[in-house]
Every structure is written in C-alpha cells, then in structure tokens.
Length: 214
Length: 267
Image (cartoon, rainbow over all chains, first blue to last red; front, side):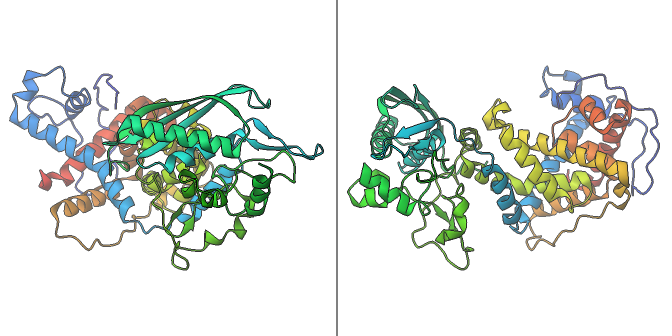
C-alpha cells in the first residue's frame, strides 16, 4: 500500500486469454490522469490535496469506484469467512496441540515438602496462568501480562509482581485495580510460597463492550 | 499448606491453568492447584477459577496430557456445560489477545485462531486458487505466528500481521507447487453456497465482487489480493512471486481495470 514509486505502466502487457469483458489495456485517462496516478493519490490519503484531481467530477467518481473495489476486496473475503460452516475445530485442535508442546514453563518455583526426598514446585508459567485466571474472575478486568521480578527459584526471596490489565469501559479503574491486586495477593499466598514484596497493577487499555472482534 | 498440596494431587486432572506447568518431580502436581476446595473454604474470588466452558467445551485444561480424562471434552451437542461461564476473552480486543498469547496463554491464541482463522482460510484459498491446501497453509501460518509473537510490534495490528504470514506461507506453497506440477492451470472456481438473503443490496454487491474476483485469472487475482488485502508493495510482490516489477504492475493494473469494469453497475 505504501508503494509510491513512479507510475510507469507496463506497455501493452500480453493480453490474458479467457478474461471476459477485458477492458482495453492501453492507458485509459480519466480527465488526463492515469488510474495508477489516482490510486497512488488514494494511497497517500488524498494528501497533499491535488486540486486538479479534486476539481474533476470524473476523477472523483473514479476515486470512489477505486475505493469501493479495494474495500470490497477485503470485505468479500470477510463475508465469505463469516458464512463458512464452522468446521474449524479440527485444524484448531491440531494447532493447539502443536502449540502446547512448545509452551515454555519458565523458571521453577520451589514449594516446601516435609519429605526431604521430594522436590516440589510449580513453574513460572503456571503462576502466570494463575494470575491471568484470577484476573479473569474480576468483572470487567482482563489481565494482559504479568511479570515476576526477583529470584523466584530461591525460597524466601522478595518478589515484585507487575500485572498489566485492561478494563471494560465504565468500570471504576481504581476499584478494579484494587480488586485485582487483592485477588492476586491472596491467590499467590494460597498457591505459592513466594514472598511477595509488592504487587503493581498497570492499567494500559480500556475496551468497549462488543468491540472485541473488530 | 501440606493438606492443600495433597488436594492438588487428587484433583490435578480437573483443574489446571491453561498453559499448564511442568513439574520438577513425577510425584508433584501438574500445573496449578484447584480451587473448589478453596472456594468452599470461603475465598470468593477464587471460587470462579475453574476451567471455563464455552459451548460446553472444556477450555481450561489445554496443557494437560491427560486431557482424555477430562469430563468436559465432549462435543457441544452432547454435553453442554452445566454452568456456562462467559469466556472473558471472547470479547477481548486483538491487542489484548496478542499480548496474552505472547505471555504464554494458549487459550488466548486459540481465541485468535477462531476469530481470524476463517478469513485467513478464505484468503489463502483465493491466493492459491484452491481450497484444498488452505487448511494446511493456515495451520502452518498460525503456528509460525505463535512462535513469532514477540516480533509483533503493535499488537493491535494483529490481523494484518497474520495476513502477511498467511501470504508468505501461501507463496511458499506456490513455490513448492511450481517445482512439481502447475496446479495453477486448474484454478477451480470457488464453491460458494447461495446466500439466502439476496435481497439486500450489499449482499448483491458482495456477490458481484466475489464473482468478479473469481473471474480474474489466478495470477492477476493473486497480485491484486496481495496488494489490496495483504498490504504488500509492488516490489514485495515481485520478489515473492519472482516476477519482474513491471509484470506485477501490469497484472495489478489489469485486475483493477477489470474489477472497476465489473463493478461499474454499483457506482
């Protein structure tokens, strides 16, 4: 789309057989402008304004038609996709299987066990998964990412947790962040033996309901 | 804590985080602990932490090898979840899903695949001129996307980024094909069911556009879609398809003229 090189056209590229109603291949000027020129102008967002083009009704009409076919190229694929029977599950299941095999556990976080012969622990990835799920349980909050700073592999080392969250529009942010923070603190206390020195919550986005899939 | 850990072991199959955890020893529990017992002990926030059900499908246990043991994996028709919980990610933005997936959340990536997979399949199908290979190409593309999530600079540009990967994978496939047999010659017309709601003008316009795209010779269509839908520059298309730049410009110019002509009635 950002291709702004010269608008030299191919001189008489060979005509492709089998195309019905193929319009003439030679340059068709629209009020003195080539289609390439008009398209480049569209690509530039019609800036800087070209008074010559904008003053020509014919050019404006062609610009609109160009915009339409370009826009339709994506919409028609989206439309087709939305009408596909949802037979997606097979390939998605295969995909998820492959991905699961690649999930990295991260650092190992030790847990005490009375039997000295047993080494017990959870992975960092599991703890981060826990933090995400804790966040998902708070209404209007989705945890985007989490970070455990400090040496989690060493029992008793002070750990600072940073949670980045997004909130549904309209949710009181201070309250939501506080609830998330409290939930994270209690979940970590319940399920790990990490010494949590701090839990920071960063709200970095707000979403509008129903705007997700767009 | 000791008792609690005990209970983890007993219930590990039922309740695990979606990205799962490796364990240090074989006796240790997998993943994270369950919380039903904790919930009944009066911890309200964790009370909702259980495998999320959507369409009756157990989505919370993705990382577990013992998945077969999980009761919720029946198809939606057979066993709708008794307590359907709305998946908070189903309405999450692409940016949120991308960041979460980058953070290791397999389920977030699954939502991405469900959301964008169909479009990617149609796109790949139209680039390749065949729907036969598009599933493969798209699955491969999503796998690559998962591995390269850290390269995605602007997570809100997830979809164009995915389309770019699908474009690349489709072209890789074309190259392989070229080395063997030219299937391009058999560009099958896209099978398409008649839409029931043909009264709507936009419906008709979309149908007209679909037909017009379908009538384009495959090489023109490919160049056109790569540029207009995939967002590639002329130079990128030329390089990927190993064609002279002038040929690519010519293909796109002809495609554009043809489409403008076909869609003239919709001005």
